[in-house]
Length: 150
Image (cartoon, rainbow, N blue to C red; front, side, top):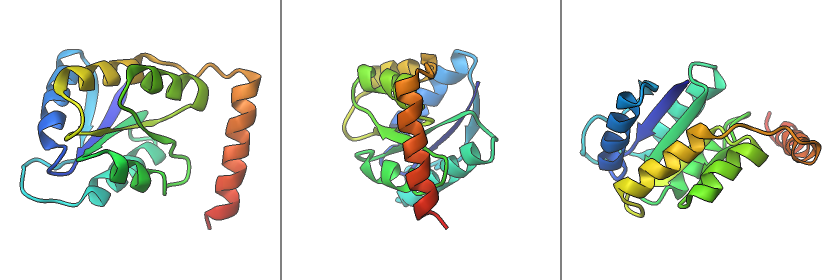
């Protein structure tokens, strides 16, 4: 699996830890920045990750900012992106299994490294189950998206 990763300055430290863990686990990474702790803007990195997933350059994405809220709001502005802010492993797993979540958003100032790694593993280890009820809901989401994106 190829994972696009991006973070602003507030998510940088957690991004550095997680990318080290991911590389050691053999996950192919597309690191879209930031590459330093200098103040930066989360929309730049969330957009870059969302676009990489949208274009098929990565199968899934990971975006980190201070709270994760701004990253999720930005990523969800892109058609076909289903970004979820997660602070527990259940949501990170079920977001994929039931909602076909393709971008995980984390708050670098909210969670620590151990929990961050647990969440990323749950996200990457999960597979969309495609059950009728879940697909029906995704189809409704896609219809809403199509009616609101020009």
